[in-house]
Amino acid sequence: MEALTISHVMLGVTDMHRSLDFYRDTLGLTLRQQIPGFAFLECGGVTLALSEPVARASQQLVGASVVVFGVRNVKATYGDLHARGVSFLGEPFNVDGTNWGANFTDPDGHILSIFGPEGQA
Image 1 (cartoon, one colour):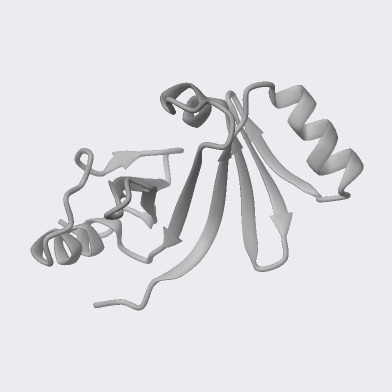
Image 2 (tube, rainbow, N blue to C red):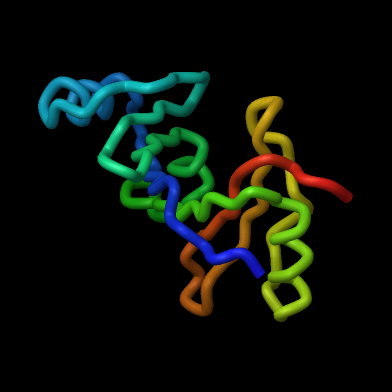
């Protein structure tokens, strides 16, 4: 199985404009990409992703987060982890046309995700 590395840390935010003002303008992080409901900022070797949908999906609203593991083949990694007993929240899904994701939880309920190219079936 491919070694996992953290590629993104995703924070649930309730007001994207306010959060971008803080992370980009106050902290000085560089905005790499923004799509509806999401903003991706450079943070060293890890991308800090801000997500309004994650905040809406969380019972806590503020403080919701997702640790995202970058992989080269989402389908293969999904299969490997599923075979190891990981219970995914759903099938792999297309995120942005090129990259795919699949979400699961750790034993304490923290949301984790694999993210990267779809790979071969």
